[in-house]
Image (cartoon, rainbow, N blue to C red; front, side, top):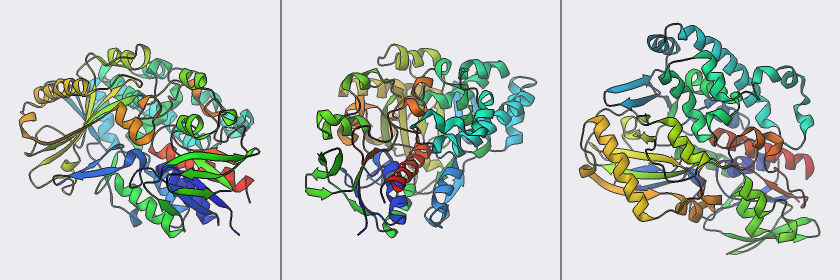
Length: 490
């Protein structure tokens, strides 16, 4: 009889783990509290608009393709992927924008126009970033983070200095470039990693390689098409999905899980994977004596940001926007301080706007626009309707000023999403949106363990364990935990 694995949560990590295990002959059931798969990458439709609820950037296409290829499939079997050009637009002020070209030679010219000599520096910077990407994405992130000896691999050991793990991202970028606009566009990817650039390891310049060399892509129909493809593949391997199913308790006999109790009944299991919020699984679903980490431990973790999001349907075409738009018209450091150092609702936040209707005419009615407006904010803040409305008007006023047009009067659909929603929908610790911060003290073996230290057959996957936050890392996390189970539970 095949071994039974129960996975809590149908996000990217949970689906990834389920498909790998099912392909190895395990009987896999995925339990999801919401009415469809995707976790933070769910979608919803209203008034002719279709909104991706969470992730909107498709970076690292090689990770997605590698995932599908191991099952003799391709991403193109499930969705149509297009490369965006420009990759995104940055607003530094009224009439002051930069479009980041997809073509690498054009990117060199752009840098040179801002800072003479910087194109040569960019080539050096990207060469080092490529090395970090090759080692980081192909080696480091596939380690389960159980022992320091995992990093005794000769390639990693020899290249340790070239990875710049102990140098800050901020100082590393400034070693190459001086122009403030260049520095801002290179630092922006780490804003969502969970720490100030001064406290983020320079290893994460690999994100700049992913951005500039590998490009920004979009799956036609929306990011949820990736979820749909992964679910279709999982189902073809025999994975069973149970939606609207809330796990209430993990049952433990001796030092092993025996199964899970849900709102619909009991499921026996030879192994359980927590693909839902790690803190929630530990603190709410396990008896206290079987928890690896205390509440005090969790309260000391440095979390990546939460988000205040607005999903807007606009009844008229909008000018001046690309598919992805970053608004850096206010000081970066001041906003970052209010996320990471002195957590509070920001005074003058940077924000991001996705307008997928510029690329995809299926996500909005003809002649209308689909807007996704996101403000990175500190986790754990008090969240109420009055605060949301204040920030809606704050950022929309700036958006209107910077693009020289009226927008609010044309909004025909509006929905907000913030801390309380992340907690309600995903049991997200402190209402976080992106998981655990990628600081040096929370990297690899210093993250919460992928395997319970008190229960032999309880495992974890997703953005609060290795390798970290983001869609590609979550997909990889599922593969890593699946390999741990196949090596331990036959």
